[in-house]
Image (cartoon, rainbow, N blue to C red; front, top):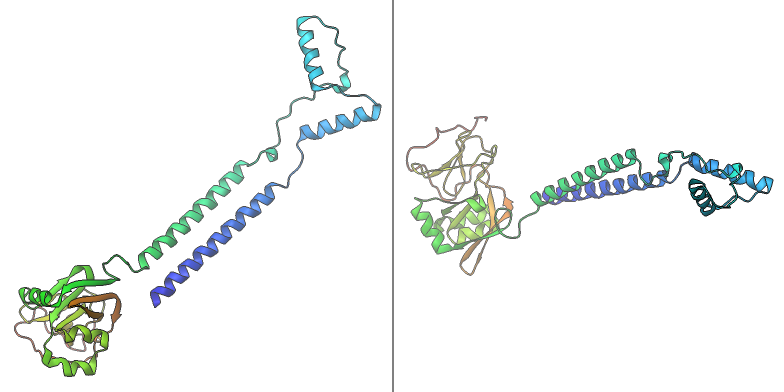
Length: 292
């Protein structure tokens, strides 16, 4: 549920950023439409008003060009253009007359890059938090036939690790089911009733990956010494509870593990199997008062 709220917050931030970006671009577009007339335009307006006041009709542009061409070749009878209507001196256009100034271009470029960065960041966060629908951690994983998994556990000397689900599998004795039904919820019991215990690899203490210990037949955390029996129930160390579980189901004899649904491990003192260490510990025994 917390992942859903994080995704929702990221989406809201991305939408607000996009709205702010569009608002800024719109304001700049509106601002660029407000400016002053160029100097050349003002001078032409003044010349036109003077001609109107004295009753002189200004020659057309074509007449001016023909007159200049005839003067260059030394002939023609076209009348000389009056000095009052002489072509205006070229004045460089005001920057405001261009569609986009350099400042506007740079500002829009910065805003565009900033907007793309926010969008890419939002998409990356959502992609990271969104559960995968194509398999792998965070989704439902079909591990295979329960009987085949039990055989693999036996071949692994009591332990089977599945890296795609970040989980440990062990055999669970049917004689322990009456006690298990008093402790575990239905999603955990589904696999226990089929004879397989499924545990999350992460230690509930500080999140270290918990390895198996072949000699003691326990799980023993190398970080701070927490110890768990084969069912993932705490036997020693600073961990606040047993190893966490995944929701499970049996579909036609196939074990399906929902790695997107983590269930907290059993409380301290739970020991449904009664298993004790079967040999030397790989990690020195840790007292309950150890702090790591």
